Length: 154
Image (cartoon, rainbow, N blue to C red; front, side, top):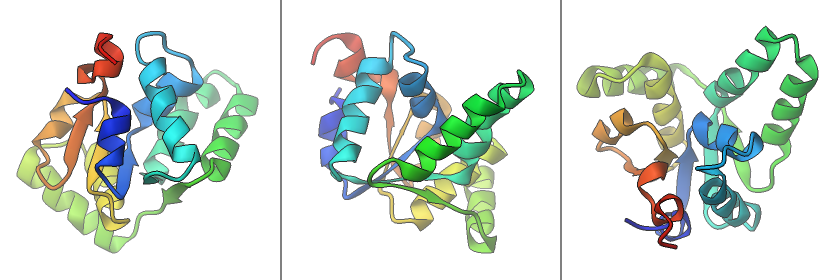
């Protein structure tokens, strides 16, 4: 399997799932090196990178449940200010595309919305750690744990 850098280099625009942000910002040992490699590429603008407002919701849910508004505010600031990362909204067109993805591939609603928003923003690749999302043939899906970065072959 490719490294995250190789996968990212093969696309002009990639979508990033929420889990990748969590691995990076919470320094999850098994996945942080791969996430770090991706965010290093994003910081220099190769490739153009998008995530949807779904990531904002998912990243902030746990800190807010724990009464950690400070951490939620930090996550929000990072998503809004990270160089070369676009946080894309949802509209009726994205909702309709998500319904098609959900129906066609039996995806969860949040996953279908995330992927539809990234597709709408021009993503051709999508980085996640959710094997179920590989079903969506509309995007080239990279599963983080399957990369050489995580398996120790980079």
